Length: 608
Image (cartoon, rainbow, N blue to C red; front, side):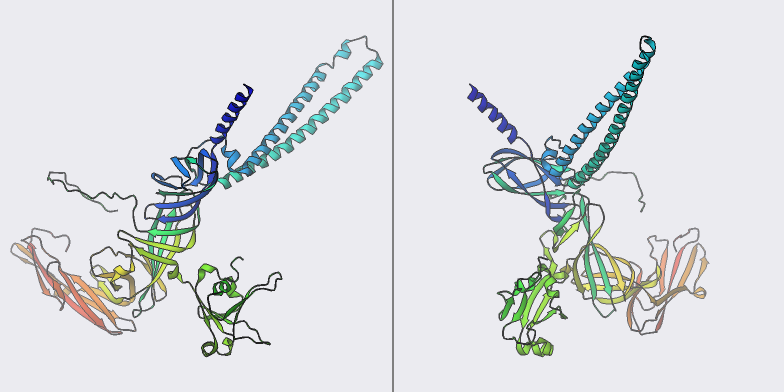
């Protein structure tokens, strides 16, 4: 009977232990950021017993799409259920999750017990003092006491009262000291708690069944809508004869509740939240409606040596002499001297470097390493290359970013670990530097704006995987403003507005003596004549696309006649006049246009 009871107790204890939750914290490994969401890949390691366990994974996003949660686990682990929550409460969480917090809480409990003991002892002394004070009249009321006995009683009262008062003062000092310790521990608890979970509220609760006890790697994948990115560009133009130097950038923002530290970042033009159901057409019936209007409103030391070891012919790697701080060196075979330094010349990205700089290069920053010896080294670097030359090429921005054009979107895989903090602030990420071959010309529409705009025409722009976004314009070394890049168009040529050029003067003036109004019986006839003047104050020849227009009529009572077009290309459907001008330095050209409008004299046209 006793054995059966013991087995039952052991079984209950084992079941209770198996049901105890296991806490772990997930680390962000990589992030794929879309225009309005992010797919996070996180990892964690959990020590699991055999049987069924509950795992609480902390440090996941505050808000996530539960339908997108995927858990990757070894074949020995079966994931029974997954639940996302922000309000997980467990008595084991503090005891199990962070030993530092548990230690502080235990210390707080001990301090609180000491303070309680002191308060009890102080209260006892205060009650005794009150008892003494309330019985001072006993001696006076008892007339049978002798003087000697009365003196003894007074001495006792005085000594005891002093002893108790001193004891209370000492206890109060002890309580004050313990309260200081308690405050310090509470402050420490707050700091440790913030370190443990300073931002994230989200948790994943997993029920799993494990076949083999030990450490288990778990991969967590889900989508959160608390991240965005937008394309952004820097356009630099030194002069109108060179291509555009375009810096392709991204502005990344995330407020997921967890900081992304040293993550592999991928930026995608896809939209995981978009409805992917193909639309179906239904019968279209017309109906009457109400009219409406719109209003607009050190471990990396000697990485070069390690890369060359066994890879480049004719290279010896000499290790340090064993002393503290000794490092490896590179010696090219066949280039030894008994008296001179045998170290080869090191050239990094075309610049000669000292023999220590190359040791500081991180491994992932090196693109290639080549060895030059003999006449080849001497012909390029003279006597400095007598011991051979190590030519190191480091990765440039383009080498860190690979662009993948899929069937439905474009993605940028970045090979540089990034820190993107969960603070809602914009983080600038450099993607790629592109030289855009462009044809430049100036454009002006003086009826709307009396300034010339530089336009850059780019052919075959689809090969650059451009996305809609804003761009900074730096022209001839000066910041001139912003423009918008919109590759989502059907035209073969992408026109980029590169800003205003103040060195081109444009004037549109009304010729008064060639303009006027006539009244003909029931009609009014108005003539408008304008002179367009363009002057090139630049030091080089320019090409300009100049445009103006004359009005069109949608009413048969209003007739419009173009009297003088200034030898423009006339589009009669839009009323737009176009001139293609070539202006030499300091050259001025003048163009005259004139049109006549005839309409009933009892009518008013308010937009002439």
